[in-house]
Length: 260
Ligand SMILES: C[S@@+](CC[C@H](N)C(=O)[O-])C[C@H]1O[C@@H](n2cnc3c(N)ncnc32)[C@H](O)[C@@H]1O
Image (tube, helix red, strand yellow):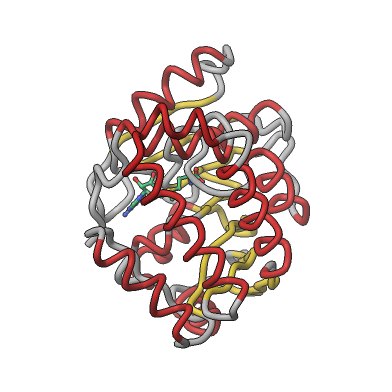
């Protein structure tokens, strides 16, 4: 089960301050560019599953010149903001947004050349049916690309991060890189590859920690209040430690749907 509405107005504001307009995941436009560096986007029909606030959909359509991007998410509140950002970017003719209930995707078979998926699978309890649906809507020869957090090692740093998420009532289901790869293969994808990006993410988490304590501090305090700021910085530090101390991992993945 995935839960919608875990992203409220205040944490959306905060995450956008950190990650960039339209993003709920780390790295913003630069991370999208890193993820799609190994695939062709120009002229393609692209699906962004769990598009959130639409930042990646906008980057895929504008910077990476996708012919069209379909963004899909379970959270109507996020899509409302995404829709405003798409309009602001003047991309309504090439980006469409759809809300759906967790489960089968309300999309036709083999409709997309490329599926983009970032920081969404960690919300999904049962990965195989989720990936099987993505495979169904991918055209033969098309591929899935994305970035995801993994459980690297069940050490104290990982458990602190996992406990924090539970304490805050959030639903995350991190799996190991190997389990993630197996789920993709079991769902029928082929040529699965996962590139370890722990070092790059460690640097990025560190830079967010520094910015949160310096240039973004006042804006964050204003948006969240003292207690909210303390909680947010604690979250950022525990996540950074999880990665730096080898508990969490982050990687970029690609997988292909076989022709015929
Ligand atoms: C960490 S945010 C990432 C959003 C976006 N991909 C980004 O990088 O900014 C996770 C997103 O997954 C969405 N989500 C959660 N469960 C989902 C599901 N079963 N299917 C599609 N999206 C889901 C959430 O609503 C949220 O937008």
